[in-house]
Length: 78
Image (cartoon, rainbow, N blue to C red; front, side, top):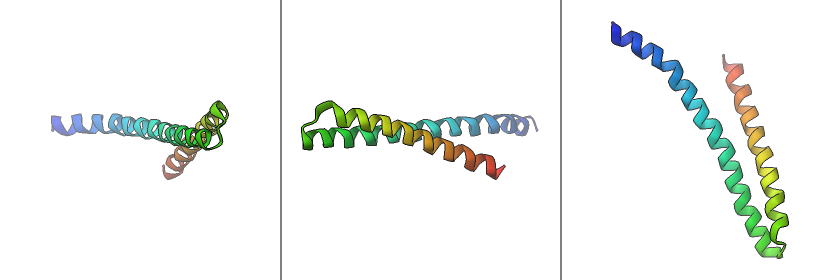
């Protein structure tokens, strides 16, 4: 019986941890993809910092949009 109560108490904290990892993965993934594409664009067009800076900003906002969609999906499922 005591083990069941401990498992029930740990379950919400593990869900919160899973949610935190998913949010950080969404933002980090968008930034990594934008940096790689920005570096490729800079190399192709020889426009050293412009493509990288622009795509880092766009990648950051894309990551925030993904996080917003994730939070809305989770709130709607409750």
